[in-house]
Length: 219
Image (cartoon, rainbow, N blue to C red; front, side, top):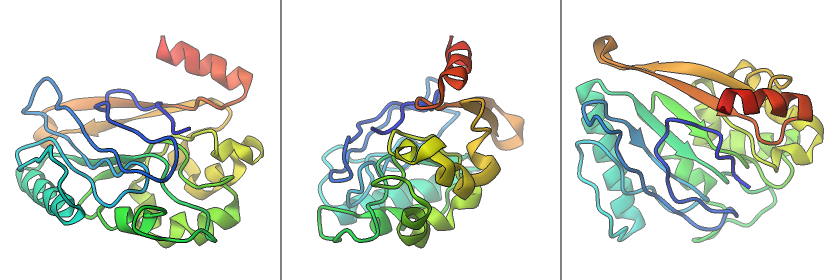
């Protein structure tokens, strides 16, 4: 199950398995503070619609149209100096999985991440068990892995199929926060310090002691 840990991120459709694409976002109340969420959720073909000043098409016609929408939105917001974030969950199939037009599209969705300031994986990043071999053979071999330096992840239950989600924390290092705490936070600053968003990632599958800390943060 993909994590719902990120707060102050627009809600969007989500998938419980890495089979289907769902995409959608609604803008922040102050549209001057624009944020692109490229929601490549569930390993689908493309991500659309997007919020911001670039065109958005709710009809979700084709994968090619979705890619065009992503690129146009990123270009427009980059030119305006606004931060660009891509968020997704249920990202990578296990390395032995067969890639076809509807399944295991981690390479296709990873190719959409160009121009991002931050990438927010929203849980179940690597199927089936989040092992080190699975991360190395699938997630890391795509654009998702290439964007690791700008990634701020939140874990899901599949990461915890391996004790303590140790490979997940090892793979992302400090960007995944302290596994003993069950949460971490960071800031996004707008152009010319026009705004600051404080982002909080909660770890829903942490141990009981860490979960208590998560509950206090969420309160």
